[in-house]
Structure formats: C-alpha cells, structure tokens
Image (tube, rainbow, N blue to C red):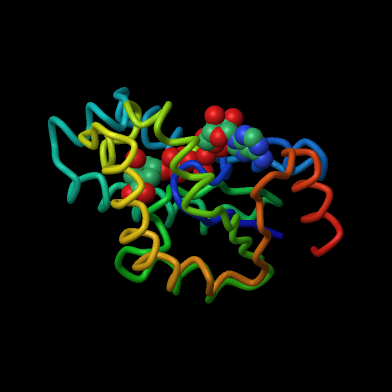
Length: 172
Ligand SMILES: Nc1ncnc2c1ncn2[C@@H]1O[C@H](COP(=O)(O)OP(=O)(O)OP(=O)(O)O)[C@@H](O)[C@H]1O
Ligand SMILES: O=C(O)C1=C[C@@H](O)[C@@H](O)[C@H](O)C1
Ligand SMILES: [Mg+2]
C-alpha cells in the first residue's frame, strides 16, 4: 500500500510522514528531498537557476518513479504536487493507495511559515506576516480544491505530531 500525504506548505507532511513510516515500518519517501538529491541542489537553487516550470516537470517525473515502485511506502508530497498537471489523477488511479490531507488553518500555516519561509521559494519574497497571511489565504483557497479530494482529511491545528499520527492510524 502507498500512503500519500497532501497539504499546504508547512502543514506537516514531512514530519508526519517520517513518523508514520516508522510506526508502520514502511519505506519513506519525501518528494522534495528526492528532487534535491537528484539535482544535487536545494529547491530554492532549482527555482532560481532553472525556474518553477522545470521544477514542476521534475516533480511529476519523480512522482512517476514513485508510482512504479511496488513497495509499501509513505510519500510526503510537495505542497504543490497534487495541484499540477494530472499528478493527483495518476495517484488516484493506482490500486492500493490512500491519500491523506493534513488540513491546517491559515493561522497555523502563517505562524509556521513565517519563521521558515526562507526555504520555500513560492513564499520567500513575502516580507511581512500580513503579506504572507494574505498570500496563503488566496493560495489555499485555490489549492484546497485539490487537497480536499484526498481519501482522508485530518485537521492538524493544535495537535502534536504524535496525536496526528495516532489519528491517522485509527482512520486507515
Ligand atoms: N503538529 C505539529 N505541531 C507543531 N509543529 C509542527 C507540527 N507539524 C509540523 N510542525 C512543524 O511545522 C514546520 C513545517 O512542517 P513540515 O516541514 O513537515 O511541513 P511540510 O508540509 O512538509 O511543508 P512543505 O510542503 O513546504 O515541504 C516544521 O518546523 C515542523 O516541525
Ligand atoms: O507549495 C509549493 O508549491 C511547494 C511546496 C514545497 O513542498 C516544495 O515542493 C516547493 O517549495 C513548492
Ligand atoms: Mg515537506
């Protein structure tokens, strides 16, 4: 079985994915980390030198490699992965998969991302908290359409990673 974690930047896909993989004894793949390893560059550097379109094509190709792998695994997708091309359709078409939306409020996302935006090229130019919050509000409105098509939605606000993992285990 493959379990895909979806959700906005900062919703906890990487943190929860790694913990869940350990609990279930599944292989763990973080799509963003894979891209960085394959390119030998940070996501910021890829966006800067080759542009977002190049990144999106790579993201989609690496998703294909993951879809071909038949191991049991947890996959932390990038924040944009389900929202581009036919990425989400390709995930849903596969047998024996589950997708989980880590649903975070604008408040939670703004709090977390304001201190970490430097590593995230889509938001790194937003200088004030207000500008970041306004951006997230609009962006999440567009993207929630995709995330909410996941099989399971888990609200993550004010929950510890352990609580979230336990809730996911119960609902799988
Ligand atoms: N339940 C939680 N409670 C408190 N902090 C959390 C929780 N989940 C994640 N975090 C923290 O929020 C930040 C963002 O988490 P993480 O990097 O896992 O998000 P992500 O969804 O993988 O983001 P991206 O799409 O940009 O890769 C990290 O500093 C992480 O430690
Ligand atoms: O939401 C997005 O578009 C992104 C999220 C990150 O996971 C990375 O995939 C990258 O920074 C782009
Ligand atoms: Mg991540």
